[in-house]
Image (cartoon, rainbow, N blue to C red; front, side):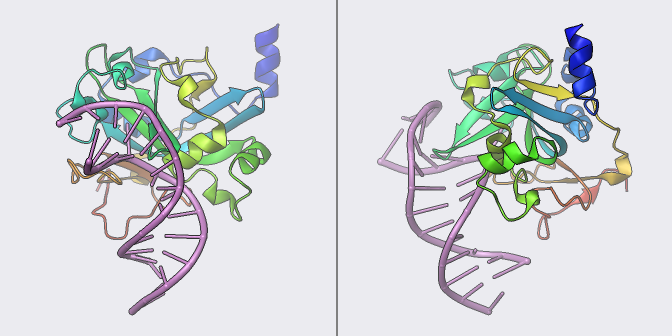
Length: 218
DNA sequence: ATCCGGATCGCCT
DNA sequence: GGCGATCCGGATG
């Protein structure tokens, strides 16, 4: 059948993560999304990468979370069901993608900040203007959306396998390989340690020299 | 390695 | 009217 044919063509990619994965504490979801695979299918083709860096945005009390502004047309999907995409436009030119977490009414999400490319590299290179190094394809939240073809048209869409953007299970990541630091580029709640990334991974957006960082498990 | 400015626009005060 | 959950290129140490 068609499903089997699809699986045979994409043997590296695991099953979509279920809604229950996202219906949990946002920091735990941010930690556990490390190693998962973010995939986007468009008429141009399929592109996918392994998530190596995330940030948690934890609700209206978090000044850096867009939900700090309350329920507005922009933030409506943060209040939606867990397991959907919250895609926003920033600085007049970049898209960024989040996975909405927790239950309805609790506006929080995980920003995907960096990927290690797995599939569709020629397409990513074309979309990103053929950077000299492949590590520059997806080492930032705006870059990875450009590389995968994620746009505002995907805002509010399910991540569970029925839309263009899907998050799939990947190989487990050990706690010893996870580091935590404050979030990048935020001015409010600037010291909250809600950024998760893979230690020494070359695809992480920046290796924080000045940022306080610590191992998840000391 | 680090710091800067410019591009560009939707959203909220 | 001001300011971003950014990126890029250029200048400087």
